[in-house]
Image (cartoon, rainbow, N blue to C red; front, side, top):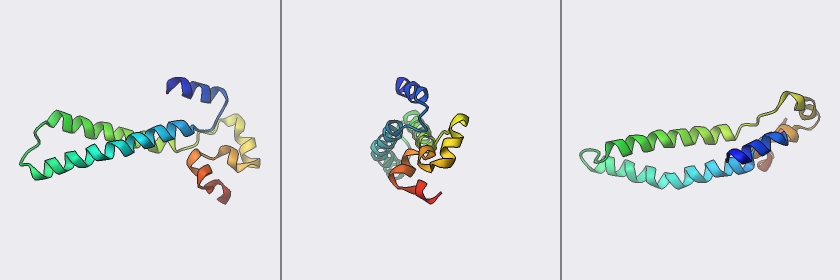
Length: 104
């Protein structure tokens, strides 16, 4: 992932579709574990494995933050002139696939 991010910055890309998809799939896959741990905590009197429970929710929260941050476009200052002429050039991946850049 770090190599992919370095290549993206070298080409001066605004965002990374693969990085967004990685975090999206990561969060989707972890939702099942999230649900299972919540159910176990609610049905049992106490949490059997407290360190695992706490670490999972900390990691899941950080994954959600990474997903939100990967959806934001990072426009370098030298490309701001191009973005003013063509809004799609500065749009994030999510905005491009939903045509949200068209509203600018």
